[in-house]
Amino acid sequence: MSLIPSFFGSRRSNILDPFSLEIWDPFKDFPFSSESQSTPEAHVFRADLPGLNKEEVKVEVEDDRVLQISGERKVEKEEKKDTWHRVERSSGKFLRRFRLPENAKMDQINASMENGVLTVTVPKVEVKKPDVKSIEISS
Image (cartoon, rainbow, N blue to C red; front, side, top):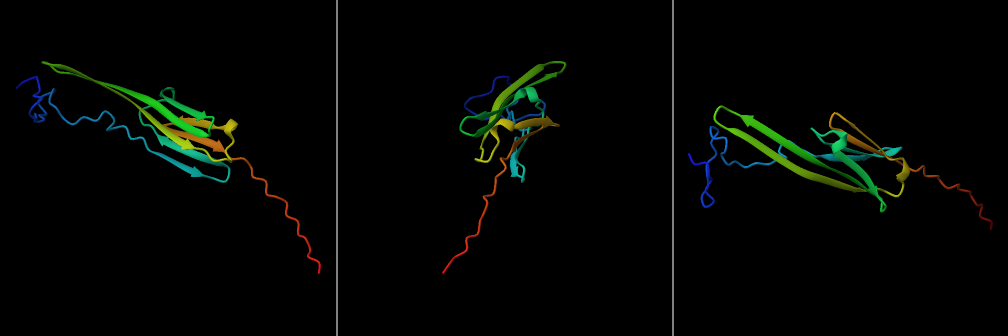
């Protein structure tokens, strides 16, 4: 069994070979899904960020009313057996952007993270309904 993979032919994956080539996705266990909803009081954004803590996530608002959620994940997996030692390292960044509506209170945005779920709450500006005055039509 060769330890050097062939670049001209494919090498079959072998569960007994710790160096076997397999399709490897560093984020296969890292789903980043997000949702947004609007309540009468606020716009609420939720992002599932399993395995990350709040220090690894950044929430920013740009001047042009864009909410940006970003971060970086770094994973190191180490495996030791009697005859070999393997270390895999992966890292990657993620970024999501949301345009905030005109009725967002930009100075009162709140973010919290619990059990891998980031929740960003953007309060809404109370819309004052215009006073309507009836005008009687004369003949």
